Amino acid sequence: MADQWTLDMANKLAEECLKVQEKTGEDRLFMELGDVLGASSQTLEEAFLTAIRTRMAELKGRAFLAKKLRAIAEKDASE
Image (cartoon, rainbow, N blue to C red):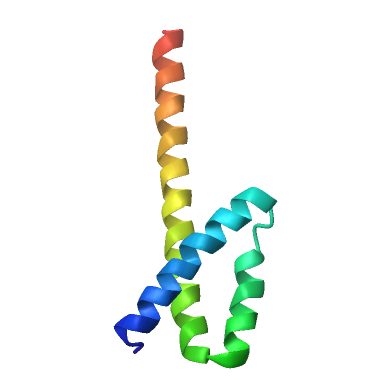
């Protein structure tokens, strides 16, 4: 398991990577960054990939819930 310092770095990199992905539209940029990290530190690579995947999963989950709520609102509006 990674130490707290490594986890903090991985979390910060994940946040920054998501911002760059959003600005550039490169939705697989995190994989490239993971490769760059893995060339020097497998521990940081693994911590980063965990951090980015959990954030991406959260974003997908929130989008799913928002879509469900829109569908309900549209159904209610049409009735």
